[in-house]
Length: 154
Image 1 (cartoon, one colour):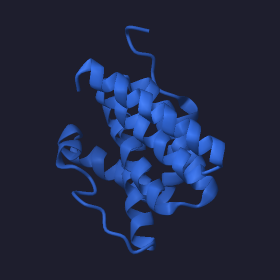
Image 2 (tube, one colour):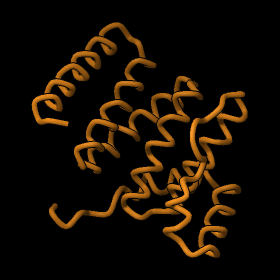
Image 3 (tube, one colour):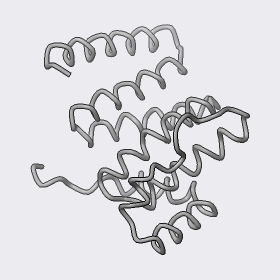
């Protein structure tokens, strides 16, 4: 995305955020937080993206919007892959899939992208996937509390 387009997108998302806040549309706020996360992730500002995704997740859980929670969990899972927190990434993906099944919605694409499987030895993947099945919420909550590892340029 060109810098001008990025700045323009950021401007409009911030306007939308202000509007949703003003009219009390918490779902709209959560969606904009998620969209800002996508915007920052696309410009490799992973820490900022993480902050927006976690805000979106908290807000959407608070209001009970399960489908948007699925979207945010998948995006948050991608961030955890980037920082090599595969346990949290797989927990996010497992929980997103579980919620989608519970509300009878279909997720497009693979539940676990094949490149994640290839990033880990098979035994490690199976161990982490098994943990995700039994402890997804705890793993995600702990990973959010742990924050992201500091990058070398911070």
